Structures are given as structure tokens and as C-alpha cells.
Length: 252
Image 1 (cartoon, rainbow, N blue to C red):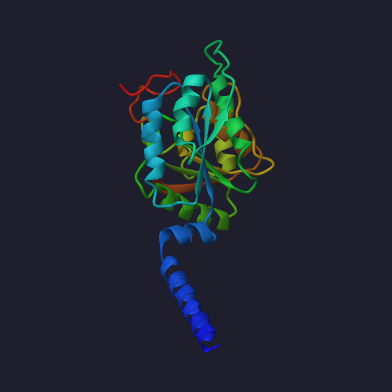
Image 2 (image 1 turned 90 degrees about the vertical axis):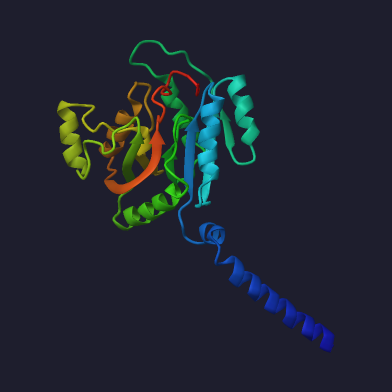
């Protein structure tokens, strides 16, 4: 009887000790706190070296409350993405040949990826020729998400790095001001996919076939009422080697 009582006390002490120890780790805080879960959506096609660098930058993040979802559009691409299937949700898509200068069908891959994101979750677009700025990028983004939610704003524009504008031309403008500029210059904002983090809501506009899809995606979501929050932090280095883009050219 006394032995059972002592055993119970020892177990209680052990549980309390483990809780206090684990609860002080970043992993515990990220997973069990109210920190936002961030969905990282990646398009890759025929670029295993770029994708490897992209994946390494994700795995190095100190902020662990994230989900990685990746599209692949042919057998070869799906094969190299499958190497990371323990930490990446693979979404096969059908490749549609590009026809005409203004037609970029691979923009539609993002819509397939968005289907895997629960309503209310936050999305960041990290193409295979991009990588996170450093290993604390998602930590900074999670803080920006909390601030933007307090202000009732559901699209975050962060500083750019790599072969993209450091600050989009619309910096610090509200949605009405930006839309007014776009009336006379549709590409006024000079926004890039890597600048954007957005909350998935029922009214969220999806991607179009047209090239410069990031500009249209930004415009269409301002149009349905998304108000931008400006984050004075670097999150993604986009197209950091300049020759990636949509041409399926891999790291040399």
C-alpha cells in the first residue's frame, strides 16, 4: 500500500518535471501554444537542386509549427519530391503547355496547393527558386501574423530579398490607395509572390492563368477586402540566383 502511494508520488513528480523541462523548449511552445500554423506552398518542376536548397531552408527554421505542401507536374519531379515525403505533402498536378506570352498555366498549381490549406490558416508561397532569408524567418513571420490579426488585417507584405523589389511600390498604402493606382497602372505595386503571406478565408481570390500572377493575385484579394499589413522584416529570398523563374532552369 505504502509502495503504491510512493510510486504514485514519484510518477507525479516525474510528470511535473518533464512538463516544466519540455514546456521551456521552442518546439513545445510552437506546437502547443496559440502560435499560428503556417502553410508553406511550393511549386517545383524539373529543378531538384533548387528544391533541395529550398527544403534545407525550411528544415532549418527554428519555428516548427508549419506544414509544407509541394506540387509536382511530371514523373521526374514527383520522384525527387518523394525523397522528402516525411516532411512534405506531395500534390501531383497535370502540366499544361504554355501558349502565348501572357499565359502562365503553372500559376494554377498554387490553387491545387491551396485546397490542402484549412480555412483560417496562413499561407506563404515559397517557390523552388526561393529560400527563407535565415533560420529565424518563420519566427519573425509568426509575430507579424499575430500583430496583423490584432489589427484585423489578413494579408502581410514583407520586405523582399533576392531578385525582387526590397519594398513594393505600394508600401504603407491602404487597399483603396493601391487599387486607385492600379486603375491606371495594373503592375503599379511591383509585388512578388515572395512578399506575400495571406490568411485563407472563404472570400480569398485564387490565382489566374495570366503571367505576372502575383500582381493579379494581390489585386484580386485587395478587391475582395483584404487589407495589407506591412512587415518590416525579411522572410524570403526570392529568385535569389536570378535565372530560376518559370523557365525550369536548375542551379548550375
